[in-house]
Image 1 (tube, rainbow, N blue to C red):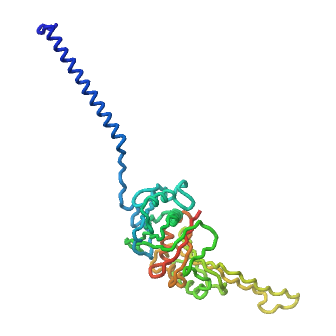
Image 2: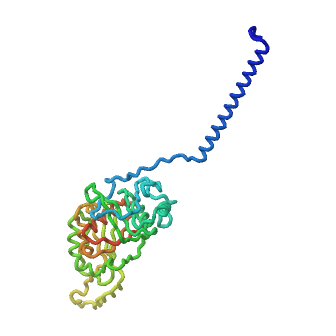
Image 3: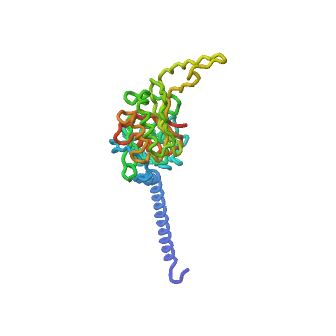
Length: 351
């Protein structure tokens, strides 16, 4: 026992110590319970914050295709952006891409599943504004258009550079359709449908204009051109080349000309009886290097102008799956530059 304290003092001191220790334990216990409740409530009511995406475009101006047909933006459009790595709707990523390609699991017939969901979640619109990276595969572009068409968006505007400048505008296409690629003939409604008989009077002019540029091949006017039927105009792109193909369809073929009667041995046939007559032409094609589509007032537009310069035309657009979108967009802008009627376009989705 401490020499300076009595037993009673010692008991009092120990009692005080015991009370103080109990109080501390109680305080600690209450604090622990309060902290647990706080963490529990926080975990239930609050979700981890997801950083908002920047509203700035992920496709730069110099990454847009060039077009010599351009206008203002469609009115109140649904804005869709496609870069090599993502697809965005109203500045929100809806789908991750690899090299601009659509994942197989996202393909639903001709539509893109995530894009369908995003369109349905957005306020109803009648038009869309597309900002597509120039190297986006054509198949991706065509499937975006098919999804928009199925959703009832009537007008599309593809953002472009206004020629060789850094100013932007929109290649507007008011009449369009999308189908899977096939060999079936495509007919267009009303004034968009050209007749095959329209070709013969202007074929010579088209040949001359075709050769005034970095051409690959220009169809020389045939001495015999088939009559009747409708014309299908196809814009086709592959590699570094673009081609306008004209085909006749929808008319009965003429019966083959009678062959000369074989003469008896030793008897000279009449002059010209052994010559083979040229088959009436039912096709014509004009091909250039891609650079022709990025030249103002180039050969592409001048070649098609005799057919489509004053009257609107319907055209089929097709290309290989991995053809860069800029080939198609620039081709359309060169074939139908500002100042000529806008076309009705049927886009084919390649396999």
